[in-house]
Amino acid sequence: MNLETIIMPYCHYNLTSFLTSAPNINYLPNDLGIEIAFIGRSNSGKSSALNALTNQKKLARTSKTPGCTQLINLFQITEDYRLVDLPGYGYTSISKNLRVTWEYTLKQYLRNRHCLQGLLILMDIRHPLKNLDKQMILWAEKSNLKILVLLTKADKLTDKASYKQLITVRQEMKQFQQIIEVEIFSAKKNIGINLLRHKLDRWFYISSQLKTD
Ligand SMILES: Nc1nc2c(ncn2[C@@H]2O[C@H](COP(=O)(O)OP(=O)(O)OP(=O)(O)O)[C@@H](O)[C@H]2O)c(=O)[nH]1
Ligand SMILES: [Mg+2]
Image 1: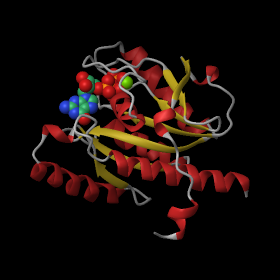
Image 2: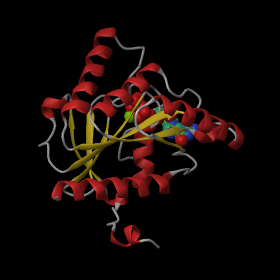
Image 3: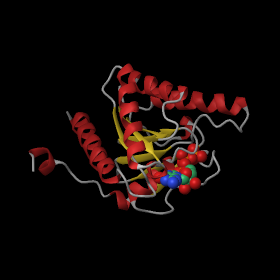
Image 4: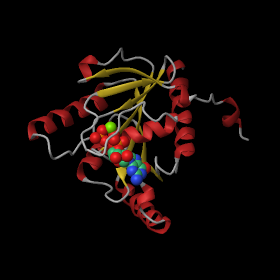
């Protein structure tokens, strides 16, 4: 066990509870503490990943119909640590106006929310790295956010095909400035969940240390 493992506080993700919802960034709670957000295309499995992480079936609403999450939903792990479930982007069945407005809201959120420290970018393992995914990575890099890409619904592919996609996406990440980690994930089959918990522990810990310096 290394020193970091000993001193790093462990977050009790299973104690996470709903805090509030906001239609846009003007309605968010005070910009204090530390936030980590789940972002990704509509239907990529953001809300399901949050439920798997917190080991709660119905904390965030999920649906097989894309566009299920329509508000910025905030959940608190502790008073200072929050998880944010964002509506998905790239959902073609809503009006172009609504889509553009939402994409603008996301940009504002990534750019102006100071307590936002990390972004989990979820992509369906069968359709990774669409243009809007790349756009989010570029915005996140501009705001100096920590980034982890999760290739979701890995249970839909064989192990071999999942691994092949993982290698391909890791290779494609080299086009970005920072080193971006990519992992395989499945909320359904509990793949990658402990790894995600460790990653978040680390992000919350590092961010809280930076804030107190
Ligand atoms: N097979 C499989 N299905 C999944 C997994 N994760 C999510 N799903 C399914 O994918 C659909 C969308 O999941 P959500 O978690 O609602 O996706 P979302 O990204 O929050 O969607 P929006 O809120 O609409 O943007 C649901 O039918 C889920 O049951 C997974 O790991 N494996
Ligand atoms: Mg959702």
